[in-house]
Amino acid sequence: MTPAPVPVARPYLALAVLCSALFLIGLDATVMNVALPTLQADLQPSTQGLLWVADGYALALACGVLAAGAWSDTHGRRRALTFGLALCGAASVGGALATSTAQVVGARLSMGAGAALLMPSTLSLIAVVFPDPAMRRRAIAVWTLVAGLGAIAGPVVGGVLIEHFSWRAGFWINVPVCLLVLAGTWRWLPESRHPRPGPTDRTGTVTATAGLLALVWAITEAPIRGWTNPTVAAGFFTAAGVLAFLVVWERRHPSPMLPPALFSDRRLTAAASALAWMFFALFGSLLMLTLYLQTILGYSPAQTGLRLLPLAAAAGAGAGLSLLIAPRWGDKLAVTGGMLLMTSGFLFLAFAQPASGYAPVLGFQLVAGCGAALAAAPATEAIMGAVPGERTGTGAAINDLVREVGGALGIATLGSLLTAHHRATQLKTTHGSSEHLAPETGPVADAAALTAGLHTASWAAIAATLFAALLAARWLPNRAPASEPDRPLISQPQETL
Image (cartoon, rainbow, N blue to C red):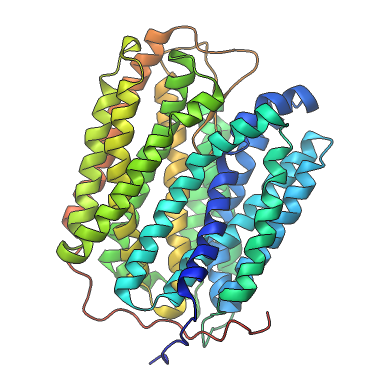
């Protein structure tokens, strides 16, 4: 039995520090999207170089998050958070001072690696700071809300910075934030780690990273090269083979990086599956909204960002609603209801017409945004509540991984469906809420063709959210188990890193 954790003197200050780090992750995922045209004019990158600037951050984050979560369990979650912040800050300085595309790409990849250390640490430390299930549920609701707000704020902040400064401001903005969060980390966050870690699973770590790299790369490249392109197909086959080997290896290792026993808990597997399909639809929808607002309605990047703000307000309402529903009636009702609300929201886009104006976008944001936040917090709580206390870093990494991979697949799949009706358009996608059109093709000229693609992609998203609702209704328990897994042993915040 793990000893009771040492109380944290100011848990809500600790939560503020963790959410600030999380907001930075979401901001960095999308803030550079609207900066790409000015960066292209300044550095003259190739089309492939521009794609790597856009996608490098998400690629490094997705393929590194699982290994980073396991590393934090063994070596310290506050330590992982500190290293992640330092790497993000240093890489941001490098990106701001870059004089070539290669330097910018390197900075974005390094920032993604830092975010891979940051993201699971923020959620796993919440489980440490708030060992009481009721308080932890409220803290996780705030965490899920902030995760969405960061991504939504990216285009808004990026648009303002680009209009008044340059693309370099998208990097400089991170530096003071990293310094402030680092100071708060040392002052208010406790250290925590697995009290009895086994031998390091180096083979599992390398295998998981390589398999996820191949998978996310193939997903990202598929809309550009084509889903049947031999190189893309080789990426998918490689990922399948490497990840299959990982499953076999983890079953045999005495101290696996990703214990297979975790997935025998239907609470974890159902919540993770529902989250993956939810983010498939949600991230793909942000791409669709951006194209609709910019291409069909003619808004600028900054105007587009402002018109996505109702999504944040609706998410706040949904997060509050989850705190009323989940504790009283259970995670199953909250997650299933949230998924059905998302399904209803996509109907606004499935029947939108060019003459409809902003109304379908607003309707979608208010309904689907509320549903996404209603489902996300209980699903995240279900994952974290299902893992043992010494494995909170791994549990947080699983939560983050299904979000990232589901979102990347949603952007790629729904983006392909969206543009399939217009052959002259070559869509380049990134993790987040924006899109990039190849410079040689220009904007989509045929609004009717793009609207038809919007309808097709919306119906695919409806199918995804309905499937997630069915998963939650079938496999999530009505109530959490009476006894939660033990919380991890933590040390005093003053412990030397």
